[in-house]
Amino acid sequence: MHVFPRYAAKDPSQAAALIRENPFALVVSAVDGVPVATHVPVIPDEDRVTLVGHMARANPHWRSFESSPDVLVVFSGPHGYVSPTVYGTDPAVPTWDYAAVHVTGRVELLDDALDVVERTVAALESARSTWWSGPSRPWSRRARPRGSRPRRPGRGSPRCCPG
Image 1 (cartoon, helix red, strand yellow):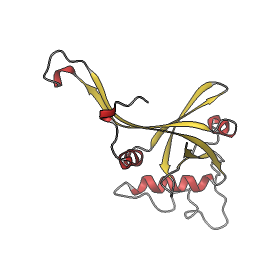
Image 2: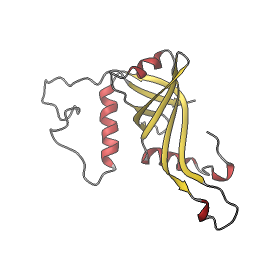
Image 3: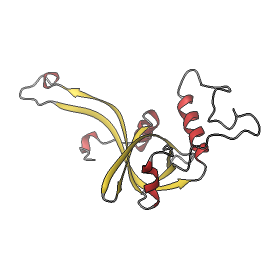
Image 4: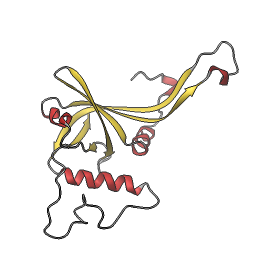
């Protein structure tokens, strides 16, 4: 992504905040030389350096990470059109103001997809004033009756380590 120096984030915590506040990311990779992209919630891992997300088992994109682990993860923040009329000078041109973070890295597939789903939901629910809780959470280990088997989300949970 081209970044004009005067608009670049001055502090890495600004990029981290944009990622936390806008976790619905676009994960992009190449499969047989063809770009493939999937929108998926992606959150910082406990170490705050790597990212984790979950793709549905039915989505073939995650399977490509075994042979092509390099990805671009795009987080988009607030954005909007800026009319030339707001500048108060003439001539002026229209533009688009936006905040975005591009992270490149290599994907590592995790075996415990359910853990990633639980952590993702917990992270997203913690930002809400009223948390979703109780036995209506069939994806949660804590909400399942003892001895029952969950519907396994599959091995489609990638961890992205920035490269």
